[in-house]
Image 1 (cartoon, rainbow, N blue to C red):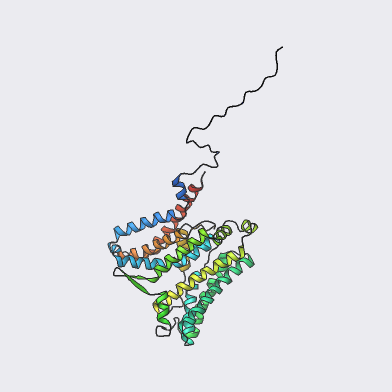
Image 2: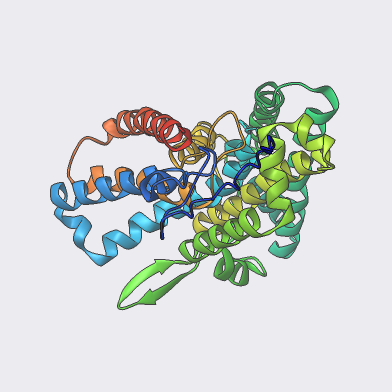
Length: 359
């Protein structure tokens, strides 16, 4: 009798060839070039190198060590403010009042110390409180009203600009503050905010050191702390961030206060560098800070950027600003160069971002 049942032979699995990896299309490891392009600071780094080489060729004085120290100084005064502005942009907002806030801080410290004949450190501390209060106001108005940061900080910009001029004229009878260089505490404050030190016979401003220190600190915060994750989260999608427990209100307000801290620090540098402050200055500087952050790879839509990128962005600004002078060209072309750099950086960043995220 013939057995009609047939047993299926067990399937024999063919082992993969040695060294081969099976992927499903979602786990393909992207090439190293694309992974590098995904970093927001790569494009501006290449641009900074190109600008540096260009002025090395076109402006021979740039090759001198003292000239490079001056370029780094100019870059640092922009870069110190560009860092908190960049963090704020990564968090999805920007601040149009940052330029005049620098002058507000310097005016507060100068007039309070001089008019009340106090130690200048009293003015410095009060100026810090005022700067943080301005940032707190901007952040609080933003989260309470839901208005765009453009409108909120534009209003603050106009308020501070008018207050700077009106109060200075009311208190001093002039548009500038009085010289405070002979007051108690001035030398100690100048050593922290506006001193120089010698390296190989070249005078280097202390702001260069502060700039690099703040850049390292901001990079560590973004990449290694929970607060850094919060910044990226609220900039990417604040509703989703709130749904997973991110303190959106605290993060937004604290970022505006960080901008206030930067305004205070740069304001103190200006005060102790020149001993007096012009009340009408600062207008337009906010665009320089924002542009340095954008050139550094930060997107206006938020959720993307780094702290290293704005360092190279600020360096490009300082390089162009001083390079034009060293090359003997008409300095009126400075803003034209900056506009070209800004548009070029935006286009490059857009291309880099699309290329890096393409599957």
